[in-house]
Image (cartoon, rainbow, N blue to C red; front, side, top):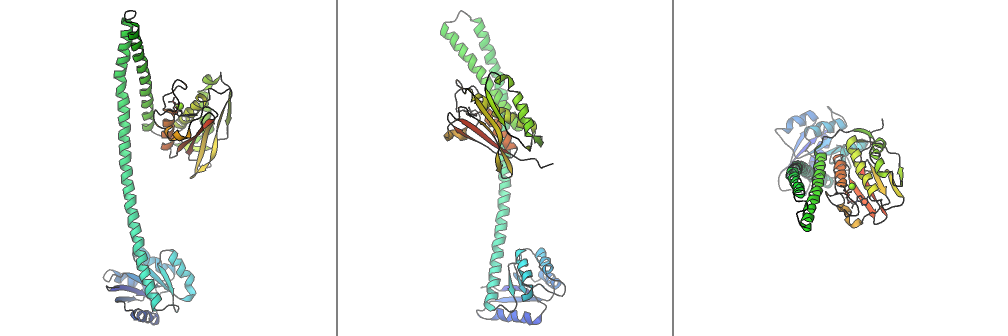
Length: 381
Ligand SMILES: Nc1ncnc2c1ncn2[C@@H]1O[C@H](COP(=O)(O)OP(=O)(O)OP(=O)(O)O)[C@@H](O)[C@H]1O
Ligand SMILES: [Mg+2]
């Protein structure tokens, strides 16, 4: 080491202290300055005027014993690498100190100059690396927090944007619908047949656009809406969601299999929306089946969250496009075959994400689909 190394030594036994000094002086020569204290108080007092880079510490001292000795110093100067210097009979204590942050321990009577110098060098190097990692971590956390804040802000802005766009599009659309309607009535029987067809097409396109705008509006409202999280009985949620489909399904043959569902932490109304969307799809995409089978249940646990699923034996989908299912207005089936605008799963994903969970889908063409999502279970009451 090229520069003068400042070493502190806390040792109440003069013989041991002298031995250490002599070991340090042995070749190869290390430029060092040793500050000797016999008590913890003495060391702590001297640190301000006489800073050290590494400390050799005996745990049994007149004013302090055992781990307390280590903690008193480590709490005061957490950045200081400490090498414990122990008697053979408290080796256990020394290794405990290492697990609490001491860099190393040396057993008196079992060391030589080489081991001592190596322990000092390694202690300093390790401590420096530790500090570096800590700084990098802090820096990283800071940067993550900053980026997250930026993302949240951008997201908010985007949500506000899509809300106001969809909101503002409604008025001109109403004008188009209104005037096309008036035009059709005013020109009934006068216009050539193809012109009437054009008007009819404009009219139904604007109705369709109205539906898209309404869906988008509902979707962005769902993102902005306040959440009321509480323990929720998912069986009750599913029952309520199912009630909305009684009329639509009384002409169908559907075999329901609804497993026992646990209580979760969530917003009742939002979770009802999740099941309504998934049940709606299960009913819709099984409409070609003589006997539709729909199953709702728990598929396991992931990161402390329960995995729920809604499965059907319907049209299914091609797994190559499974990442597209949850996008706004993304559809894998055309509207002639299965009606819809493609907002249901996007809303589902948004709700589950707001609950801190995730969503995914599995499907096989012509065999069926399963949609999965995770939620935090409610603590046992
Ligand atoms: N149970 C399912 N079986 C097969 N395909 C599905 C199923 N659920 C969703 N999909 C596919 O994912 C697409 C997106 O689903 P999503 O619920 O978002 O829209 P949608 O049902 O078409 O319309 P909307 O829900 O807005 O009425 C669907 O168009 C369909 O292609
Ligand atoms: Mg749907």
